[in-house]
Image (cartoon, rainbow, N blue to C red; front, side, top):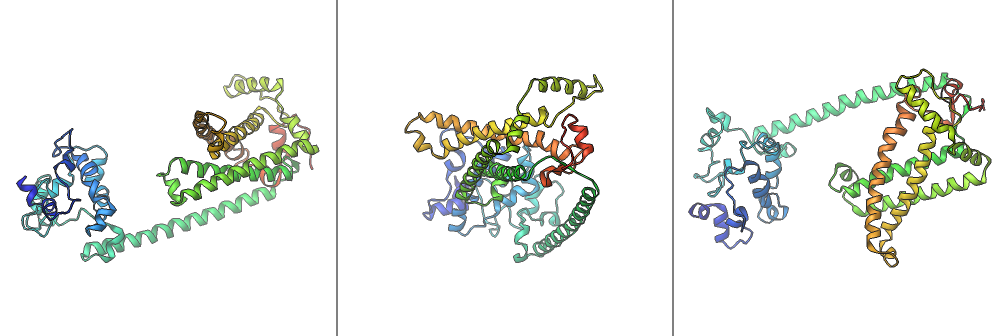
Length: 404
């Protein structure tokens, strides 16, 4: 009690500052615990309550970066990864008699630094103890110490070096990659029409709306994630971007339905994509081929089981995501007719269906249209609709579509 009374906290309390911490602020009220040997908890759960508070730091003109810079230091990183012997705030500043560095009795006063550091670092001398713990590289230029200014310039020089060097490498290889891909497709003869213009536009709008839905949806679900920070701090922006992309997805679905039943190509498309008994035989034949039990691949027509599975999965997923999305969006109207648990279950279905859809796109669709060695870096049909006769005969030998 005597030590606490002499500390900055005790003096602040005596001066009538109600924000000053007392015994119960650090030790709790009922489940009273000792803190001296709990290295990680002292900094993360005790000192941070006040010293990471922007309100308190601003109100009392305290440094706002002390918690952040501590956890970026070696001691802080070691504590975060479970070390029970790494120094915490109290190891240097003390636990009860906490004083500013200008006070001769402070454990972080220049006269006592060697002794303080020597508790954990035997043999520490004045040069060792002169090292800074709270180092903010982003504010070093304004610092009064030479080390701050040197660190600030080193950081700036390396940032320019990193972005300049890696940026030039990336630009060089991207241009080289683009030239080679263009040359490859320019030389290749691709006379077979795989996707009509209407189908390509539907695919493009579907893909764009899906990407926006995935990014904004997971940003809404995980607001503290890097993805959410990438979109900015505006929750209404993420919410309305998500809803707008959902409306676009439903509209392109409606466009596709009209296309299927109102055009010759659409009616042929739905006929060719409809599952038939042969698809089951093709799956079994493909399994045997992939396992090396046979050297014969299944003979596929215009669309095989892979394309059909994905197509009907998109239809199913669009219906599920559309219905549950509208339930969530208009939950007040929905609960006038249905119990509230319907909305809650709809939210769960919406989330897990989104996870399933995104993983399916990455694992299944991206392989077949991007990472398959036969089409890498991308199947050109999604761009101009055409493929080569060689690829067509290899992948879809039973499709009699000729050059168009």
